[in-house]
Image 1: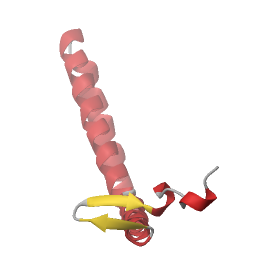
Image 2: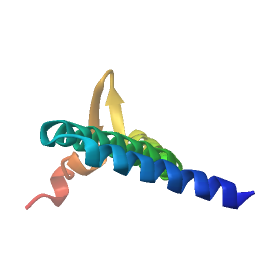
Image 3: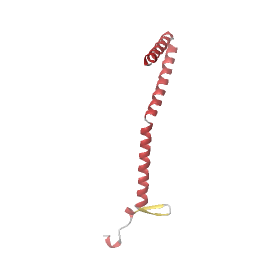
Image 4: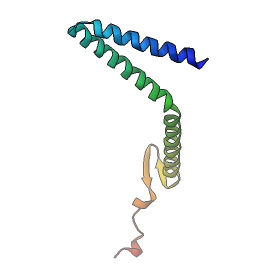
Length: 98
C-alpha cells in the first residue's frame, strides 16, 4: 500500500522539477516564489494545528491566574462603590506613629 503512494509522490516531484527546468528564467523565478509562499503557508498551518493544544493550555492557565488575582484583590482590601482601598495603604493608628 505504501509503495504505490511513495512512487506517486516521487513521480509528481520529478514531473514538477522537469517542468521547472523547461521554464525560462523569469517564469522560473515566479514559480519558485509561488512554491516558497505555498510551503510557508502550509508550514504555518501545520504549526498552528500542532500547537493549538499548547496555546489552549496556556490560555487556561492565564485565565486561572487572572481569577486568582481578582479573588486576592477582593479579599485583601475594602471596596467603597467602585473605589478599591488595599489594607496595606491604611494609616497606622495615632498611638503607634512616631
